[in-house]
Length: 282
Image (cartoon, rainbow, N blue to C red; front, side):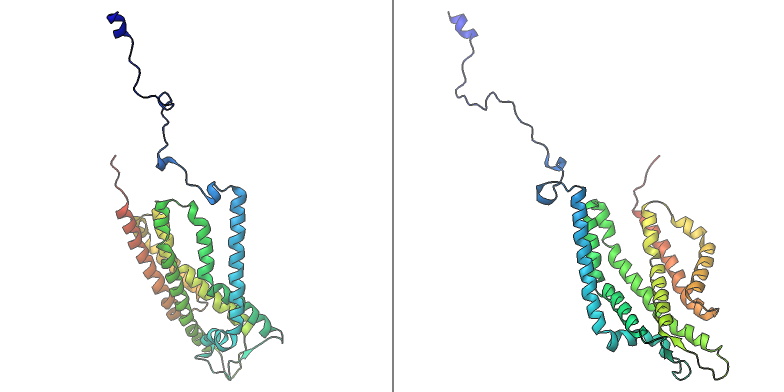
């Protein structure tokens, strides 16, 4: 009897429904996908809806900026744009003219619209950044965020350099006017010319940013840029000749020298990227 009792296991002191239930394994928080809007991931239509909202906001910023540009056109914008043409030229021999009665209105509308985009460009760029930001990885975000102010400053420096160099182009061109002829400078030609030159220089000044991205993608190296410096000098001179439509070597040098400096800066930037790159042992 005692042996039989020893073979029967003793019942547990307490019994609960959870006692016999299998243990549930909780997923690690790090493996869970981040949820998007309203506790779910955004599908294709949600992305289109967000893109539509961002575009409408950007359009609203541009419209408000265009209205502001309309009111500051006459006391500020027009004089600012015409300054490179008037600063060194005699207005009696080089007067500013219009083709027809409608041109002043059309130019004012165009300049106001462009000024609106420029004035509210930080907000417009923010909308673009807010749309792209969730799709970037953390390391991509750390890489892109410093590039935004750097790109803006380089673009502004290029525009400022072109704005200061354009009067020198006009001084050189005015030397070829023979006698006392009167040269008519049409506003419809001049303002697009000034904008194109400034925009071109602003884009050229993005060279360090472009080479930084290429270095991150391992498409260029500092040794490659150093070995191709002769080709770079020729390309820079050609670009300066295109941006400055005069054969004057002085004006070409004024634009080519900063671009060459940007090329040297790009080599330094690429070298810094290579130093931070982890070393692989084969």
